[in-house]
Amino acid sequence: MANVAVIGAQWGDEGKGKVVDWLASRADIVVRFQGGHNAGHTLVVGDQTYKLSLLPSGLVRGKLGIIGNGVVVDPEALLAEIARVTAQGLTVTPETLRIAENAVLILPLHSALDRAREEARGERKIGTTGRGIGPAYEDKVARRAIRVCDLAEPQTLSDKLDELLLHHNTLLQGLGAAIFVKEDLLSRLLALAPLILPFAEPVWERLDAARRAGKRILFEGAQAVMLDVDHGTYPFVTSSNTVAATAAAGSGLGPASVGTVLGIAKAYTTRVGSGPFPTELNDAIGQLLGDRGYEFGTVTGRRRRCGWFDAVMVRQAVKVGGIQGLALTKLDVLDGLTELKICTGYRINGAHFRHLPAAQGAQAAAIAEYETMEGWSGSTRGARSWADLPAQAIKYVRRIEELVEAPVTLVSTSPERDDTILVKDPFES
Image (cartoon, rainbow, N blue to C red):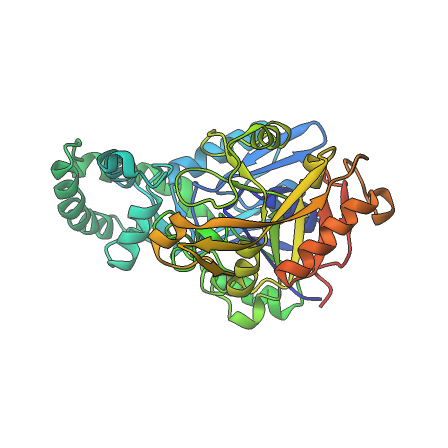
């Protein structure tokens, strides 16, 4: 049996939580490999709704969850999330959750700098969540980050805080924001140490042993390919690589261990925050998609921008993200629309494009070119087989397959876990 990596194929919020939850029942271990608590997965299980940001979704199914070294971890946010889901009946202990000892920590100064920078951008805001993700990754590559393992060494913490504060307080002061006092941060971290360290270990060893034993590993991505710091709509992106290749580096396993790559895409397109969006609908249909799909960010609470399915963007995500099959979600949101459109190309300054260029100005100037299809009058909600779908809905799915050059291997027709049409099990090698 193969391992599976799940990544978003649009701008995030594609319904990865439900798909990962569905797949987790077939896995032994679920690993988060990048991002931070700027990600959000909503899982509906019976009468309970779980909103997860840092915790791997597999915990809801009683699977071992691992937070890999590619994740930046806010320890206070993590403990608050553990407390919240524990109150809902989940068991989160060092027996069910492990954290990479070399994962980077997000400190209060990171979120303070994040917010101050975004405020200073004025009308050119990126749309960051302000949770310190970007500044934490900056410290990581600048080799001044505090990592989980440092919590066990008070002298190391003290020395690293000197360097961190020299850098961050200078920036904060320049932006007119309050600075941080070393003694306050040090005492805060030393108090967190006994709460976090019991979860810490070299997770690469555990994952290697699981791989050798033939265990099924599910790699859970955050955000999506078009928010990748290299391949997305830069600078309106996240601060990490979101493509499937990161599952290896972000967990400590080799690239051959990643297995099948499943991309998640909505049957239409959404985006939270700023940045280009060629198929955006600022009309009644866009409003309808947002209302039916309950398009509000799990983390931000902000309403998502909505538009037609962008096959050009998803095709690009398939290529650079290493996607071998698509899970198409929220097909039911399109029920009853008499006409549907799919973006098949862009017109940019008079020229035709079948990809989204890297240049920021070109991305902003992209105008979608559409192919129009007939909608369907029947309902797809709750469908669990192709026989339950209207013929025109099947035609729509098949056309998406052709345009994005990847098979649709799973279709989701409601938030409920079992309202899923399985074409091919991703765990089958």
